[in-house]
Length: 235
Image 1: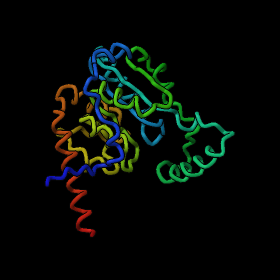
Image 2: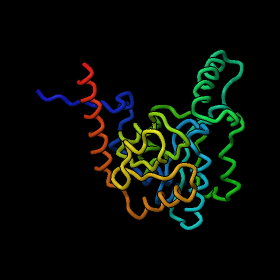
Image 3: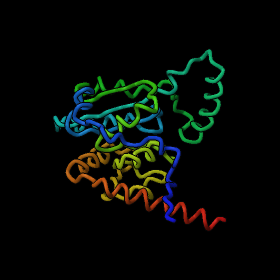
């Protein structure tokens, strides 16, 4: 009998595309333009949202048909200090932060969304700065044309995994595992980390040469079988 195996972060299989999704309708509801770049997930400094906004601003100053959709909660500034769970989160994520982020950086003062006003791109940026329930996730991935992962450093990314479920190409920086999972020009594009011009050029290249959705599926399938093979070799 034939067995279908989904091994690339199967926990994200719950986020499946809605077959009845009306992209044009949702674009209109959210106030989005023709081409939609998505930043999704907790707003953390290592994810480089400040660079996403700066590089998008360069693109937005040249084109009127682009939108940046930012969907995510500002992690450090929305924690309820009175809750015991908050203290636990700060201990856990504080330890992770020491690994991922330079100790001199104070993430509690990280306010990348302020750049939207400073760079005068309010009309081309849509922000959903709150907790997003599982039932809402498909809408944001299906309305987007690509997923932005302009991270400063990278560990395995849940957002990247979700993007594969929606056959959504990713634009990422050349950090961590991204150069292995994202093949430039095939299932996404790669930019130099901390280089605004490179990120801007990558976004521009994506618009000029869109990534076929079937390529995203092929790369996800390839990675699934690589994971499966490694699992067999370990047994």
